Amino acid sequence: MMDERHAQVDAIRRRIGEVENDLVDAHAAGQIDRREFVRRGTVLGLSLSTLGVLAGCAQPNVAQVSPPQTKPPQPGGTIRAGIVAPAAALDPVMISDEGGLAVLGQTGQYLVWSDKYLNLRPVIAESWAHDHNGGVWTFKIRQGVHFSDGTPLTAEDVAATFNRLADPVVGSNALSNFAGVLSKGNTKATDPYTVQFTLDAPNGNFPYLVSSDNYNAVILPKDYHGGWDKTFIGTGPWKMQSFTPEQGVTYTRNAQYWGPKTVADRMQLTFYPEEQAQTLGIQGNQVDILAHYSVSGGRALITDPTIRTTQYRSSSHRQIHMRTDKEPFNDKRVRQAVGLLLDRRGMVEGLLATKSDYGNDSPFAPVFRSTDPSVPQRQQNVAQAKQLLEAAGRSSGVRAQLTTLTHFELPDLAQVVQNDVSDGGISLSISILDPGTYYGSSKFGTSPWLDSTMGITDYGHRGVPNLLLTAPLTSKGPWNAAHFKNPAYDKLVAQYVAALDLGAQRTAARKIQLLLLDETPVMFPYYYYFLTAARLNVSGEETTAMGHIDLSRAGFVA
Figure (cartoon, one colour):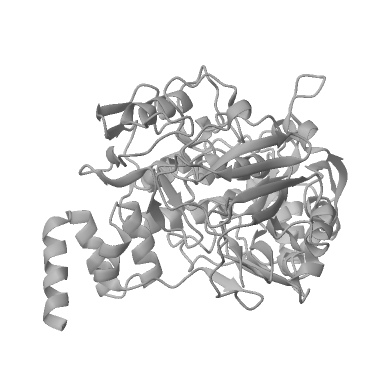
């Protein structure tokens, strides 16, 4: 048996490339653990079965807060889930919120699925591979897939989808993912079931950018021109039966689906405008599953004996930005002082009931394996903060306005920040806006998010840090609320993005982490766990820290 296994391994190593063999060597030498080996291998296009032969199964990045439901679900019935209400019109090209994402994922599908372990699984794409430097990626498209209207899916639909998303004229939400990565016209169908992406620059994590990690990357027909909310067209296991924008969606099984039929006959998504209603909904048996709840709004669910809670470590976080081009934060000593005044332990234990990892003022969350854990964690140090403020000529005090939005624990976080920084003589006034006002344009033609001197913004989970490194922090980043412009940082990010192997990524990551600790344009106080709730008689649901909820295999136990 051992000789047979060695022969399998040798055969695999002969057919895979140099980068892939370096990954195998790194795992064999103990430089990376099994979980990272599997995660990284899926990025490079190795199948889970191949990786299983090479290294066995990875350790999951998931903990059950309540005992897991291990019984298989019975066929039939209607499975019901509660989600946060979508914040805007349901257009796959423009969706940018968790509620919209959850709706989109029931009938729409991605080339690749990024699961709760941060592994990549084939969906519409059967396999993928890269050239020698990661500048060209080729995806093989699954045959026999049909849209819900019966139209066959081909590589032309895939190419059109990504050329649409990369088109600045269209203005899709995905432009933040593709800026400097993929340009319109550079995705081509080379045959009916092969798609080639020629990138603007090499990118070692590119498969994540066309996976379910990208809200908008569901595959649409090549002739799509809007009106998705009338049809919910897609290739997924469900088909829309009825839709009420204020209430929710009812789905039936999609007879055109290429994969296994759904366990339940029907599925309902109920929209909740605020979190307290969600909590009451599952406790009152109005829904069977909550796709996502927070400690601040659903603390009672954690200890409810009728509810099963699952938590995932994630890269979901809050960013506290400071305008680097405006007083008082144009002096980095003032920004450093603010970072040193934050009581992160108090935030994690008080606001989040310890269900969080500590943030260290960079996008490199502990869940990312490319994060260098040897970089010292920033701790609260009031005395050092006061010294920095004195050196900056601010010993008499600092005044500024802190702007945030009504979302989960953000208003409470704003008050904690206000209290923490007052120990150093910094006085913050707080402005709390509704999400539409915070992110949108005001009557004066400005965006409070991008124009505020200091603000707190919510950021969702990603399987890799690429988007979090570029959009909010590079000089031309579209989400750069700190107005941070640092050529050295931009260069390091380019090095990180181009790296194909973990060692090179971690080398660049360490330099980025240290640079951001020094500059402190944005503070990352914590990375909170993603919590999902289900009633005890439910089995088979799959959620991810992105906010996806897959109920195709979900149902009720006997």
